[in-house]
Image 1 (tube, one colour):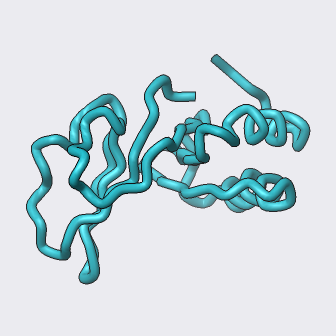
Image 2 (cartoon, rainbow, N blue to C red; image 1 turned 135 degrees about the vertical axis):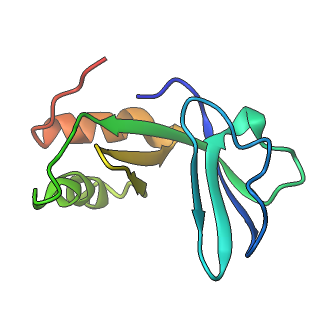
Length: 119
Protein backbone atom coordinates (compact mmCIF):
# COMPACT_ATOMS: atom_id res chain seq x y z
CA UNK A 1 0.00 0.00 0.00
CA UNK A 2 1.23 3.44 -0.79
CA UNK A 3 1.00 5.75 2.23
CA UNK A 4 -0.87 8.70 0.72
CA UNK A 5 -4.50 9.24 -0.18
CA UNK A 6 -4.89 10.01 -3.88
CA UNK A 7 -7.19 11.90 -6.20
CA UNK A 8 -8.22 11.04 -9.76
CA UNK A 9 -8.59 14.34 -11.61
CA UNK A 10 -10.07 15.33 -14.94
CA UNK A 11 -8.77 18.30 -16.89
CA UNK A 12 -9.81 19.45 -20.35
CA UNK A 13 -8.29 17.92 -23.46
CA UNK A 14 -5.08 19.73 -24.36
CA UNK A 15 -4.48 21.07 -20.85
CA UNK A 16 -0.84 21.35 -19.85
CA UNK A 17 0.63 19.06 -17.21
CA UNK A 18 -0.35 20.89 -14.00
CA UNK A 19 2.40 22.04 -11.63
CA UNK A 20 0.50 20.49 -8.70
CA UNK A 21 0.74 16.98 -10.24
CA UNK A 22 3.69 15.88 -8.12
CA UNK A 23 4.50 13.39 -5.42
CA UNK A 24 5.88 9.89 -5.02
CA UNK A 25 3.19 8.43 -7.32
CA UNK A 26 1.81 10.44 -10.24
CA UNK A 27 0.13 9.24 -13.41
CA UNK A 28 -0.87 11.55 -16.24
CA UNK A 29 -2.78 10.27 -19.25
CA UNK A 30 -3.67 12.44 -22.22
CA UNK A 31 -6.39 11.39 -24.66
CA UNK A 32 -8.45 13.16 -27.31
CA UNK A 33 -11.13 13.57 -24.61
CA UNK A 34 -9.29 14.62 -21.46
CA UNK A 35 -6.13 14.91 -19.41
CA UNK A 36 -6.41 12.55 -16.45
CA UNK A 37 -4.16 13.00 -13.43
CA UNK A 38 -3.68 10.70 -10.45
CA UNK A 39 -1.58 12.15 -7.65
CA UNK A 40 -1.65 12.67 -3.87
CA UNK A 41 -4.95 14.35 -2.98
CA UNK A 42 -3.16 16.89 -0.81
CA UNK A 43 -1.58 18.36 -3.96
CA UNK A 44 -4.86 18.91 -5.84
CA UNK A 45 -6.43 22.37 -5.64
CA UNK A 46 -10.01 22.38 -4.34
CA UNK A 47 -11.43 23.78 -7.59
CA UNK A 48 -10.13 20.90 -9.72
CA UNK A 49 -12.71 18.32 -10.83
CA UNK A 50 -11.60 15.20 -8.98
CA UNK A 51 -12.67 12.02 -7.26
CA UNK A 52 -10.76 12.03 -4.01
CA UNK A 53 -10.11 9.50 -1.25
CA UNK A 54 -8.44 6.72 -3.26
CA UNK A 55 -5.72 4.43 -1.90
CA UNK A 56 -3.15 2.64 -4.02
CA UNK A 57 -2.10 -1.00 -3.80
CA UNK A 58 1.17 -1.69 -5.60
CA UNK A 59 1.44 -5.11 -7.18
CA UNK A 60 4.97 -6.39 -6.72
CA UNK A 61 6.60 -6.75 -10.15
CA UNK A 62 8.15 -6.57 -12.58
CA UNK A 63 6.02 -8.71 -14.85
CA UNK A 64 7.00 -9.73 -18.34
CA UNK A 65 4.73 -8.23 -20.96
CA UNK A 66 3.85 -11.78 -22.04
CA UNK A 67 2.46 -12.66 -18.58
CA UNK A 68 -1.24 -13.37 -18.92
CA UNK A 69 -3.92 -12.90 -16.27
CA UNK A 70 -2.21 -10.76 -13.64
CA UNK A 71 -4.89 -8.08 -13.53
CA UNK A 72 -7.68 -10.63 -13.97
CA UNK A 73 -6.47 -12.55 -10.90
CA UNK A 74 -6.75 -9.33 -8.88
CA UNK A 75 -9.83 -7.74 -10.40
CA UNK A 76 -12.05 -10.86 -10.37
CA UNK A 77 -12.07 -11.41 -6.59
CA UNK A 78 -12.55 -7.69 -5.99
CA UNK A 79 -15.49 -7.62 -8.40
CA UNK A 80 -17.01 -10.66 -6.69
CA UNK A 81 -16.68 -8.80 -3.36
CA UNK A 82 -18.36 -5.72 -4.84
CA UNK A 83 -15.22 -3.57 -4.59
CA UNK A 84 -14.77 -1.00 -7.34
CA UNK A 85 -11.27 -0.36 -8.63
CA UNK A 86 -9.21 1.62 -11.07
CA UNK A 87 -5.96 0.27 -12.47
CA UNK A 88 -2.76 1.88 -13.65
CA UNK A 89 -0.05 -0.11 -15.36
CA UNK A 90 3.56 0.92 -15.76
CA UNK A 91 6.47 -0.71 -17.54
CA UNK A 92 7.33 -2.83 -14.48
CA UNK A 93 4.12 -3.38 -12.53
CA UNK A 94 0.47 -2.64 -11.91
CA UNK A 95 -1.33 -0.53 -9.33
CA UNK A 96 -4.86 -0.95 -8.04
CA UNK A 97 -6.77 2.06 -6.74
CA UNK A 98 -9.63 1.45 -4.33
CA UNK A 99 -11.62 3.90 -2.24
CA UNK A 100 -10.22 4.40 1.26
CA UNK A 101 -13.27 2.92 2.94
CA UNK A 102 -12.76 -0.33 0.99
CA UNK A 103 -8.99 -0.61 1.45
CA UNK A 104 -8.82 -3.18 4.24
CA UNK A 105 -11.65 -5.23 2.73
CA UNK A 106 -9.85 -5.17 -0.65
CA UNK A 107 -6.55 -6.26 0.91
CA UNK A 108 -8.29 -9.06 2.81
CA UNK A 109 -10.14 -10.18 -0.30
CA UNK A 110 -6.89 -10.41 -2.25
CA UNK A 111 -5.20 -12.40 0.53
CA UNK A 112 -8.21 -14.75 0.65
CA UNK A 113 -7.79 -15.19 -3.14
CA UNK A 114 -4.22 -16.38 -2.63
CA UNK A 115 -2.22 -13.19 -3.04
CA UNK A 116 0.45 -12.34 -0.48
CA UNK A 117 0.33 -9.09 1.45
CA UNK A 118 3.70 -7.38 1.83
CA UNK A 119 4.73 -4.24 3.66
